[in-house]
Length: 372
Image 1 (tube, rainbow, N blue to C red):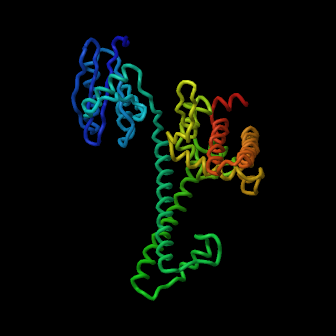
Image 2 (cartoon, one colour):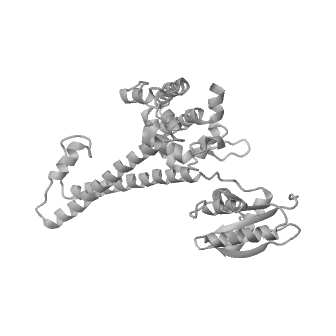
Image 3 (cartoon, rainbow, N blue to C red):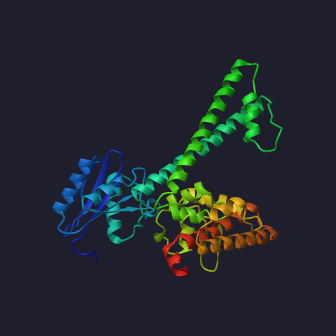
């Protein structure tokens, strides 16, 4: 039985329109209408709900490309609004008709029944830093693609760099700057590809500097400094992890965080049969990639390098003890799984899952209070 006096509202949001379905108390059928997405239209929607609803109003809509602006606008108008996870919204297998009106009504019905999973939106400052981190990741991907284009162009011309084993270092870039082609068309193509690499490389350096600048400010300074105590996690990775995960209080256990980043095994068991597959890859793929990259550094024998020792100066003993324990345990896990014949990618993913637990122990307030 629904709580009396509550109006349940489902919103199917789009770029230019919001489809609204409201279940008012004592009305068996929903009231449906459409509103624009302008600020004034949202205010008009809030006024209409306050005017026609006899009591509390609760709205919901699915997370998507429209972001969290609608939720913030409704909350500023005094209307409770929840953002829900679209991938966890129940779907009837036999339904073959999908419209905005039906989607809004279904959201309101499921919200009233308590069958939707809430998304925890970041604050405006956290969202801004997260967007900067994803901008940096976009530049990283663009730089990788630009390097591939140039390398394949040079391979077709049989211009091979053999002076050192590693490419894109100082000597390789100096070799590229001296490279010339007799054919003016090929030279124009090479100049365009090389200029794109130089521009993207400079953009990446600027974004790294900006992330380091913002990561040294409150409220990110302490969490970023703690994460930098771990092997394989420096400033950019630490800032991106803090920005993507933002409020650690929503993860009540380390297992919950592992599940959120998609590092737990999938499972399809029934009766006496148990079948576990590859990791779910659900949730935040940006965080999962960063954790896997950091786990690759943990496969070596535990040691404190000079840069890592400098990053750990002045940090709490609790954080240093957890970071040291992570090095020892993850290196031992790598040796043990390798001896048992496990392939390296599977071993690294298992290490990344365990590393997630150590990061939770460092950043979650409950874990901090327990160790203090």
